[in-house]
Image 1 (tube, rainbow, N blue to C red):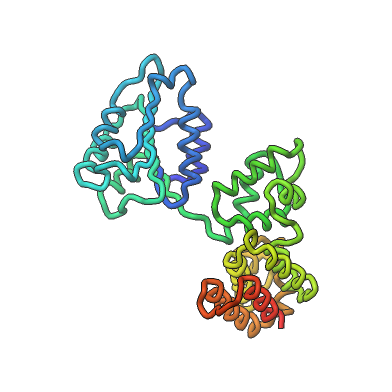
Image 2: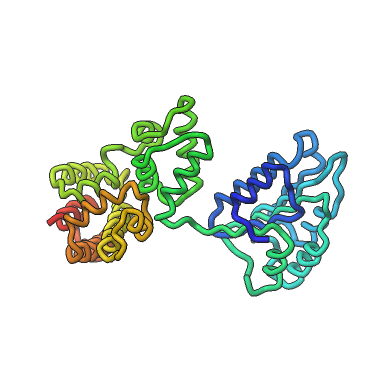
Amino acid sequence: MSLHPDQVLQSLKSGDFKPVYFLQGEEPFYIDQILDYIEDNCLQEAEKGFNQTILYGKDVSMAEVLTHARRFPMMAERQVVIVKEAKDIQDLNKEDGQKLLIQYLEKPVPSTVLVFGHKHKKVDGRRPLAKALKDKSVLVTTTPLRDYELPAWIDKYVKSQGYSINQNSVQMLAEYIGTNLERLSNEISKVIVNLGEGKAINEDLIQKYVGISKEYNVFELQKAISQRDILKANKMVNYFAANSKANPIIPMIAALYSYYAKLLILHGSKDQSDKGLASAMGTNPFFVKEYKLAARNYPVGKVMQNMSILREADLRSKGVGAGSMSDGDIFKELVYRLMH
């Protein structure tokens, strides 16, 4: 059966271990979460020596994997066989290897928990194996998070750790780190380790433990531009230009382009309620008021012009038509043109 990673983790935490798990897809964070949980919790520590086997795909064939899976546990209720880097199993993409796995799925050993960590790739959905996995195993297929889904993910993840976080801090993390969930979770963990019980994550803590300046970041630059605060925007641009290694231009251009793309959606949306706009733009309702203010300062024609200016700056930042301009020069000119 196809399940969401959260459903699988919830089931595992209740002690419900299934015979076969196949974890595939482009987002490794969830796959690692499930693999790690099974590796750490399926067996008692004393049982692992004889009953837990870790294999790596490049070192084994499907026949070898299934030989391990068909063994019986020693002095334990179950055994665990985990195949990491399963996409590299020597014959997984060949008909013979797939047939062997299909046969095992028809009659898995009930005392074995067999887990495939098939990161960064999916089994070809047209092959019989794909149907067999869907019907006969716990199948998890992960996809990378979209940018607009990130704030909600951060908020949910922090709450799952027993803490809370304010929306400005969520936005800082989303803009600075992006959709690398492993890095995001690590940075959040760094903050939590230093938090007192019952405290919320705020901008000061993000600045102290993650290293994002609460004053000089792309989120604050967006605010300054949206409010046409030329003095503040210029101050920030000069800071970024003087610290270009710590503030690379390409991600900032991408963030600003995304910001104006949302303004364009706002201008064209029939539903101008906060809830309707938040849904259309893929943003938290908390920030809709700010976008509405920006829309008053930037009519639809100027929004479209600015998106064109940002595309031009993106090309320059990649060396196309930049001449002798530095990244700092490109960014200074960009922000001036966006606001005039």
